[in-house]
Image 1: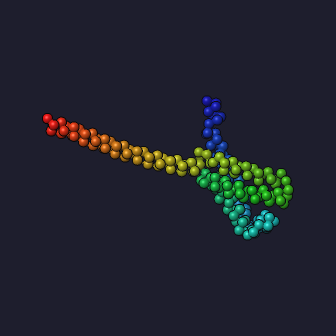
Image 2: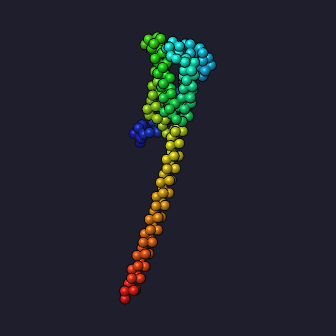
Image 3: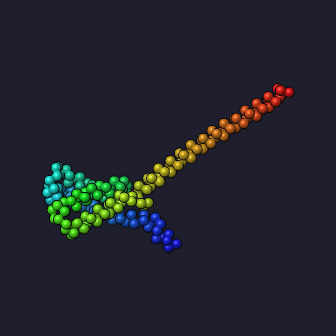
Length: 180
């Protein structure tokens, strides 16, 4: 009983649910803050990296954080959302290293976001997600299709064997009658 409680997937799925929802909920405000003053974000974070199209990339960063966070929270296309977050946070980590060196106070939150999103991307959303619901629905439809095709094949086989049996019966009886 104790090993079931400690090691079965229920606890893993619950942990993934908590990790997804909290990571998405805490990270989403960063994206909304970027959108609130996109020019300021571009000046402070994108232009110092000398990246092209700073306003466009700022919008990409904001929408990947907002969209990725919502995908994590609801558990829909979870790995895609986590990878969007990983991409944005990777650039943020690079920015922190380039502008401030190895400053643990700047890096710790970024590294926690990175670790959370990477863990979700690698392990998947768990059973408590819309991804899992969709997969179960699609799997049940496939199983119903397989069962119905197997049943129709069984009916065809039974019809053929019954026809073959009747044909063989008639042939055996007719030939036996005409031969005598």
